[in-house]
Amino acid sequence: MPDHATYVAAAIAISAAVTWALRCLPFAALAPLRASDTLRYLSVHMPVGVMVILTVYTLRDVSLTTAPPVALALAATLALHLWRRNAVLSVLGGTAIHVALASAVFSHAG
Amino acid sequence: MNAPSDVAIRREHQDTAPPPPTTSDFRSALKDSSSVGLALFPLGIALGVLVVHAGLDWWWATAITAFVYAGSLEFLLVGLIAAATPLAQVALTAFLVNFRHVFYALSFPLHRVRSRAGKVYSTYTLTDEAYALTTGESAHDWSGRRIVWLQALCQVYWVVGATLGALFGSLVPAELTGLDFALTALFVVLAVDAYLAKRDIPTPALALVCALVARFVLPGQMLLAALGLFTAGLLARRAFAPRGETARA
Image 1 (cartoon, rainbow over the protein chains, first blue to last red):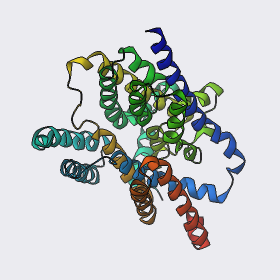
Image 2: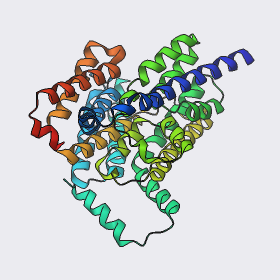
Image 3: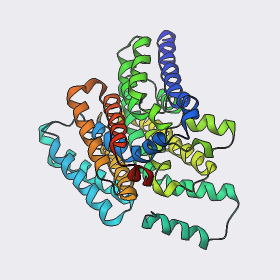
């Protein structure tokens, strides 16, 4: 179906163009403001907050039935990371625990 | 000021004789990208599986991940394409989902990337993960080359993962139960590292409140609303904070 392929390609091209514009244009727009104290304050304090927001965003569809494995895996990830400070171990450990809990223990819900 | 890990990294650099810059930057980037790779690779597989289960040929997974390269949008995009959504709505969705990247220009160290081609590629692949890694405390002395290598490696993990997932997608169940938690775990780890670097409680607390308010008040535009609220909150905090405290930051 060439029509369909054209549509898919167009959807990809549009998404790519919009995404790049959003990533690239602000650098030009903000360049004159780089020396501003307020921007420096924002750039120092934003990263931790953005990560917190993205964490909550990835969990936005968690429901009551899926919450227990997520909560346990979150606690495990946090504990692992505060204990060993090893990002690889924390990501791998937390995900393994979540996969095990979600697919084995709590699978009767789905 | 220096976090313990920061000091350790500096010492490590001094102990080793400096190899040719490109190799060194590549090796460092390979190490920097390991945690993200562990999250991006399985997520890429999950996306590839989704692509073939949406009725698209496997190579569309490669095309989507290589050209769009914005994780949460790509997961949405597969659904939009499968539903033959009008292109104008695809553009609007891309704009809303990725609008948060506007904020990244405030602190992403693009000025360290020297070449024009490097800057183009660096902005093209400025994902949440790339932003988080390059704005962390230990990234203060990373060169432009190291940053671009890191971004290239992250994209390779993602594209290869998606391609493999699409190639073998018909063999695995539609949902890889629980694998998507890798992205959550990654953001948790990055948040903890960012917190440990500054030890400032009000900022992450403010972000958490903004995220929850956005989740329940504006679930359709949660990311945009949360980031807008958070930025406004930070500006208000700075306006009311004593001069000395803001200067310290």
